[in-house]
Length: 558
Image 1 (spheres, helix red, strand yellow):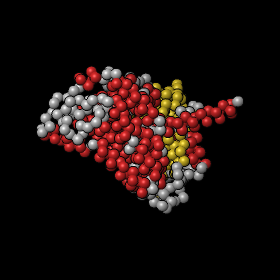
Image 2 (image 1 turned 90 degrees about the vertical axis):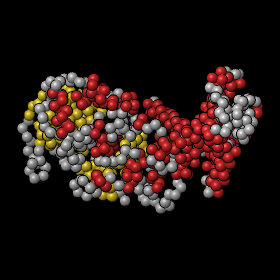
Image 3 (image 1 turned 30 degrees about the vertical axis):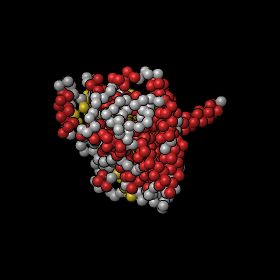
Image 4 (image 1 turned 180 degrees about the horizontal axis):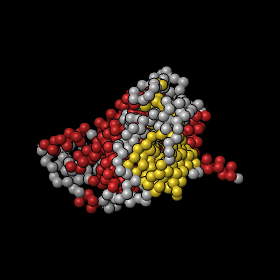
C-alpha cells in the first residue's frame, strides 16, 4: 500500500512540476490575459471607467510646442503599422533561417492588428477630443488603444526571447526594464496628446499581453527558447557531463535558470545536464549521491550554504569537483574562494575554471556526524541562526541576521572544555594533544575559512587548504565588554574575551547541552563536539586569482 502511495505521489509531483514549469514558460498565461481584458472591456462598455477618464484628462497641449512635436514624433514611430511591419519582417527572416517555431510565434503576434480593429469597430468607443485630431495616429476607434496593443506585443515577445540569450543577470533586467519603458512611453505619449483615454490604454496593454502570450504558446515557448539558445554554439562536443543540485526555493524563475545553465553547457560543448532538485527533508545529500552514481564529471551546487554543505560533504574524497552557483543570503564559501556571485559568470567559471583542493571538517556531536566547509558554532551563533527569519532573509538579506543578533543581545554564558590536537611534529599527522582548558564563553566558533556574513573576517589566519580548523572563543563578562570583543574581532587579535586557536583535531564539551549550527543551519543541541580536518578532501572550481594563492597546483577541468 505504501509503495503504491509512493508511486502515486511521485507521479503527482511530476505532473505538478510539469504544469508549474509550463506555467513559468508562459503556457496558459494568455487565458488569464484574455479574462482580464474581457473584464476590463465590460467596465468600459458599462461606463464604469468614465469617471476615471474624466479625472485623468490631460490639459490641452499646443501641437506646435516643442513637447507637442516630440510627442508627435514618438507617436508616429510607435504607430501600429510600423510596429507590425517590423514584426512581419522578423517573421520572414527567422523563417528563412529555419527558425520555424519563432517565425510561427511572430506571425501569430500579427493577429494583434486585425483583432484590435475588429474589437474597436464592434465596441465603437469614441476618441477624446484632441488638438492633434489631424495626426495620423488619430484614426479609427479608441478602444482598445492600437498603439498600446502593438507596442505591448512587440515588447513582451522580444523581452521574453531576450531572457533566453546568454546574458548576465543585470543585462536581462535591463532589457526587461527597457520593454516596460517602451510601453510606458508609448502610452504616456498617447495620453498626453489627448489621443487616448486611460481606459483605452489599459485595454490596449491587456489585449497586447494576451496576444503576445498566445503567440509564444502557439510557437512553443520552450522550443523557441531552446533553439534561440543554440545559435552560434560550437558543433564539437566533449565527453563531459555536469549535474546540478539545486534548491528550488532560492530561485524566482527556475525556467530562466534552466535556460542559462543549458545555454552555457552547450556553449562549452558539454553533454546535457543532469538536474536534481533538493527537498525540505534532504538539502542535497541523496541528490549528490545520485549524481556520483551517474558518473558525472562535475556537480554544481545551486542553493544556499546548506545545499553547498550537503553537496561538499558527499563529494569529499570522491575526486569529482564541485562548482558553486551562489543563490543564498550568505554564499560564504563562494565569497571566500572569490567565486563570482553573478549566475552567468559563475556558470562560465564552473565549465572552464580550475579545481582547487580544499579541506573539509568532519563534525561528530551527540546524535550525528556531518562534514562542513565553512564554519560551525556553539552557543550564541547557533541561537542567532535559529532566530533568523527565512522570510526576512529574502527581503533584507544579511540584515535579518542583525535583527536576530539584537534579539540575543544578552546571551547566557556557558562553560566549554577544549582539547586541541596540534600537528607540531613535522607534518606527519601524529601530533600530540594539548592539555585541556576550560573557558567561560557565550560562543564557540569553528572555521574552515576566514570571512563570515557581512564581509567580516573573524579567522584572520584561516586558509581553506592549511589542514587546520580555526577556533574562536568569545566570553565577555559584561555588556560593556562587547565593544572590546567587537574591536578584537575586527582587528583579528586576542583581547580580553576573545581568543583564537588552530588545530587539526579538536574536542569541545559542555556540562549541559547548548545550541549547535553547521554552516548557518541550526542542528539542535549537543554537549560534545569533535571536529577533525580532512585535508584536501574536496575539489572546488575557483577563479585563477583564488587558485594562485593555494598550496600546490590545480587541475583544469578540460
